[in-house]
Image (cartoon, rainbow, N blue to C red; front, top):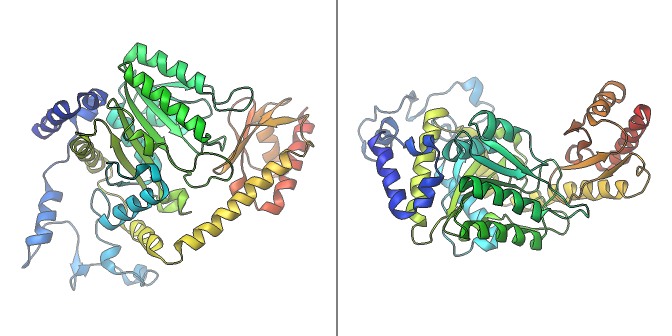
Length: 434
């Protein structure tokens, strides 16, 4: 093992041994090399005569570029577009996002957590978590209403075992007891668990109530008290899109100091929060472990994260980071974001109004939803995949079949006035098949 990795692991062992125990074999071997990037960073501050380090071409003191490309981007300086961004992301963007996290998550006030590291959107952040903490056979706990890509990220790529718990009770509450039973089982079997908390949930569009959130935290705390080491990952892809009674901040804020055996990791990003899906700008932020050791532990994990980034994509795209900075710094940012939120909220409430009309009760029920982009129908008489294909082939309507009974509808991309027609046509198509 590389001496740099050994030194990082030794630091973890001394500061918070449970954090070392949580690392995968790959996680233990990772480090950020003191190579070209480190030497180039030093040269950037000291090489006042000539800087012959980094592998870019320059012209007239700026990165070289083609005018036919830059003519569409002339509002930005070439240095903010064409050179490599730092492996951890542009410092200004990282600090702006951290300030945003503090504004929007009051429970983080006064607590220690790391500065967000830029990822190539949220899937990249989740894959970093998988690389750091998941070995073959490790158990990854999540709700059974889950984003399908988790299977590839944690299962296929890393050999983790996906352990699902029932999402909802019969009465439509979040199923805390089902979560408890799965976590207890994993804790007894492995002594280690990776827990993914995805709220607003994809595909259901549900965020727990404050009481349900506190109950989830208490389950985690109890199992940590019993000796289980836990990586608690908040997948906050749709953060901020909270329309009705539910948590209005990430559970990360209360996880960071919940228990010395709990390591909190927040995955979020501009992708959906700022409506810039194609920019692929996400973040990974570490918190948790013993308060006295949190600073050093987080620095070690950030170093290992930079090792993953360096060894896979080297660094994240520079232009999209610059564009997000411009948005976050704009005096119109809050007003414009609120306008888009109100559109999304209106679509969600209209969807609920249409579904609660009673017109479709013989064809489906629907799962609780109060946030995010989606909701799910629970079909009574037809197979979801058959209905999906029938809608596509005969009605020109696209939906997502989650399993045999559940059909996901993204109200986020349907204009409010078209929502009644959408559900009328889905009902008609279900009638065709039944």
